[in-house]
Length: 231
Image (cartoon, rainbow, N blue to C red):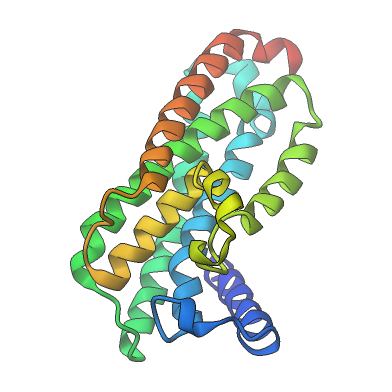
């Protein structure tokens, strides 16, 4: 229940602060509802942020198991990330159903595209989580740096605003934030029912995800034999 209530409360706060107090410019949004606009990106963001933080601490929090049982340690990271995604994906489906019932134009034909983008998001989250889980097992203060970095990344991802509101001089840099391409693909699919056409942000997300998954797996595999010595 908290997995659904927490994001809903956050959505309500964003809608009040940005939609009412700061008067977000609705004319620049692809929909008339600011709540709908934010909701389509907020739950995917929660999947990523919660998945990274859970995966990051999965080795350290299961230190007794790692020390006593011989098994592939990466399973702990995968299980943590999968649990986060399952939890928030269920909440996302419930919110989409609620939005559809209240008149928001959710395009069900875009679900396959959105599903593919969420799979890409899962791979990105897994790569980042493996990288930091390996470091966290050796250096216990990694989590202290990652948590605020994720908070900052939240505002550098077009969740509360469309990318078109960013000045062009900064827009090219934000395109290389892989979450930008993934979030915009999910939002576009559920708003229009189609895949985004040749979006450079999505291609950047593909490349960064492949890089993160490769580096994360390499580092985790390299350090995994030494986890028992440092835990």
